[in-house]
Amino acid sequence: MPQPCVVLSRVVVAQRNEQHQHMSRTLILAGLVAFGFFVAIQTGLLRTALESDRSYLSYVILLAYAGASIQWLRHSRRLSTERDRLAALEAGYGSGASTALMATDEGVQFGEERWNDGDLCLHLEHVLAKREADPRNPETGVLLASLTDVIANRHASGHFVSDALLRLGLLGTIVGFILMLAPVARMESFDPVGARSMLQQMSGGMAVALYTTLCGLVTSILLKLQYQILDTSAQDFLNRLAVLTDVHLTRPVRED
Image (cartoon, rainbow, N blue to C red; front, side, top):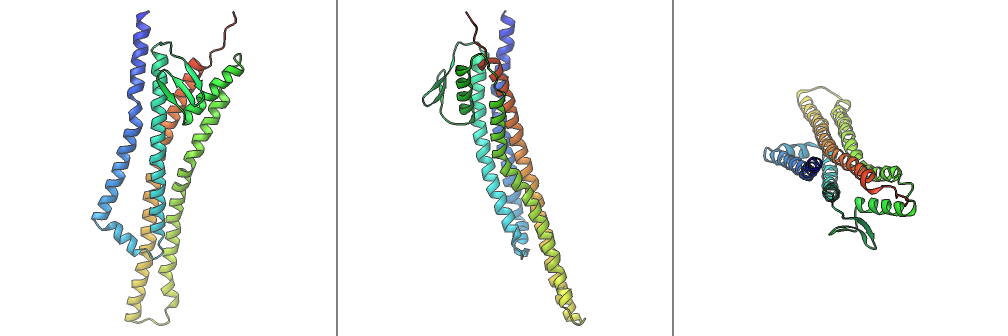
């Protein structure tokens, strides 16, 4: 008998140690992104890109990326809190303690832990209500599917912005080529002075095409990576919640 308890306690400790991995990856990636922008500012690349972009699409791209990144940080912090709460539940049930999960007027209570907000709290409230209303049918697949959709819809805006950034970069490419070819259409005679002016205007249009494409590609890739990390952690959270719900929270009531 002691051996299963030892193995179970090791699993619980490992799960609790894994809770900080998501926020650690988030902070590391955020630090790398901030360092990259710092280098771009120090080398003058960012300033050159913005000053050379007559279409101002680079400003739009950078502002959209900044807004989506702030939203990503908020989602990451929220998910980290939910994972910590789930770890507390796993530790409580995994240790074999007799602590019961109870619904209260302000949310749920598990031992000394009290939660009145968040996705996990709402899901637990629904599970407890279903178990009380129909103890013979503890199936919670619909509740888990609903929670999965809620989290996916919350992250969908980040994926949309990531695709939009790439398309804005391609739009800048088209605008840059239009600006580059416009002087050729307006040129009536070929002379050294006119040719030099035309080449300067064409180079300005090419700069717009290249810098907007660069901004769109870099920000789109970064934002996709950020939300990929967020989605992976969210899926791990949902998988562990499904196991905890089926094993501990939906036990059928035995008949005496």
